[in-house]
Length: 604
Image (cartoon, rainbow, N blue to C red; front, side, top):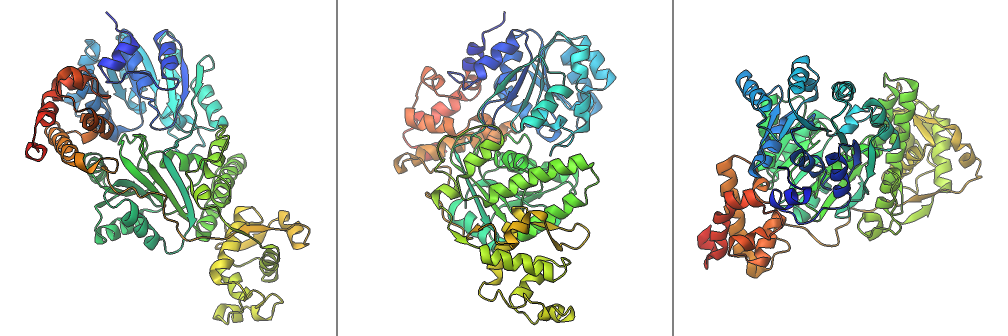
């Protein structure tokens, strides 16, 4: 006998009501319809296929590119009493046979499978012998051929529609602009699917973007003043920078680990497992890390290099604050980032159409960095979402940027690029503007050009800001073959002629937040700290016994509610959000023992 979605939500997952469009999405799948779901990270996407899989006869098959995380996802479901398994290349032949036997015998409610495994004839033949409740294609933006997370195996997932035309399918992603959305529909044959486009806003994330000015010092200040005890992710563009930054953070007293594709699979798995299971770990990583990370208490994401697109930035920052608690997204970027990414784009082997699209994406990212208005409004507008009023929780709202009339300085800068032959990078042009007697300036006789020394009134840092903003606005191009040399863009003619006034932003120092966020206990009354710590110790002990991350036992929000409600009976504990029947049976007595104790510290 099947159970209603609401009954499953309450008794299996421990929640009392659906959020946003969850109920409508679940209803569509339960009644056999296809669905395309765009929902922000932390919005509850997984419930949209897990509950229908439990409500419909058969097994729900979840296609996921995240081999390294499948074990954790399955562990979390098993803790809820859900019969779950996975198939991917990490399993031994014996484990594969055991999972396939359980699948064939109808002993699984949910099966996670890697796309390359799913499209094998052996797997498809096995699935034809089973009762399939639904197919869920997670991280569906991976099908976009020119997207930032493209996976070639995703292109063959239209086989599901061809081979199982009666089985409902759901494709889910947190990141897709209109173009990517259409590509998902076409490549996965979802033309008849109901579309559910939830709002992209993550109001708990404070967005901060500032220029690089000694980035290590800036990162250290950020961590020590705001996140000294918190888990977070630091993104770097290169593998070398990842390793150097992780080692340096360890020297500064932080528990930092590196992660990039150049490390051995065993070390990557070890570091990822520590990040998920331990508290207060800082993961320093390239973009190879993070997709599908289910850790709810990541309190910050910091970028030490500029992301290539708003899609990448949104997805990476979205890994912070999945639990809805306050989180911070810090981006440090500078002139060298703009030069490097423009060069990489120019050297790309893609088609001209691809280069044009990537150029548009990069320009949008640069625009987000340089705006003086609300960051969140611009970010949401890019995805076709709308925020009527400024958010009040980004650096542009909290500390509005100053602007200055830079018309004359811009004319000097552009003229100097022209006078030096459009063959040199920004640093050399700045030396000429400031009248430097550097060897290179004298070697090329640039001390004799008319623009030599006319910009002494601005510091080198101020000139770097001018050039960065001119490049971000598309007035200067970077020669991909010319070691970062600057070239005039036709759009700058009106500026050179003095027909257009230019106002640029004044770069500011890294601003402190409105309220520091130092530890997971930030909202706990000091009187309640002994109980809070005892509950966390109980959770940690159970997690170590089970071999799972602490949040698989209970999220921080559930522990907070226990502190507030002080349940002492099983019925009262079952009323706490996040406590379902299975977790009550498995862990209830341990937590009730802590809650009933008079000496909480003694209960640890």
